[in-house]
Length: 295
Picture (cartoon, rainbow, N blue to C red):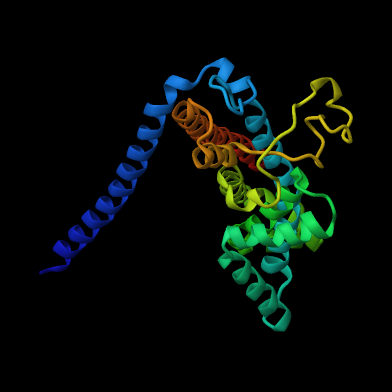
């Protein structure tokens, strides 16, 4: 077998692997959307769920999912980005760097159910907050931090070293070089990491069972500005059942008569939200990157 044949075989195997992944993903998404699309209407998306009767919706769960995403990313992105800048720009081989890397590896390998139990002990019981949005956001921050740190470090290291030297040669100090040269150049990679982390927030359920709870109070939109009102939608210290947790709860309890409709519709809505969020975030990242780089 000559080298040309080997190259063609290798290329064909790569295409086959990529095609298999696309087929599996397409089949999975098609199955979920096919069965759940019929349940999606305005009433289902905005109405509160029913406990024992049929005809309920997932409005509070959908809002809780987005609010949980905002709280989690407000905690995860600054800490993960600062840690990534340290690892890429300031760290040197030594005990401190080894300790940070070991911590990241350890956090990466933790199962989400273990993080949920950790959150139950620290964020729920020791703080006295109980099941709250903030407890869930802190638990998801623990899960997402290693991913954001790794991707931030890789994105910053991929910036050509000549850009740093040119910025420093023009009189900029190190921090100015990082803020105005390196970060804008690494923005597409950073946005990709943030999108992946955000997708995990939408789909995570195990950690939230023990931290954010499996119920949500009736939301009082007239009190949205009062962060300490029990029914305020923006109150971070209230229980909050997200869409992924609601899917698990509906299927596990099997109390409502239209369990199949709610489960299929909520699954299709969750997939649609994740896909829409990914597409919108990537489009925004490309627009911001072009503006910052002047292309």
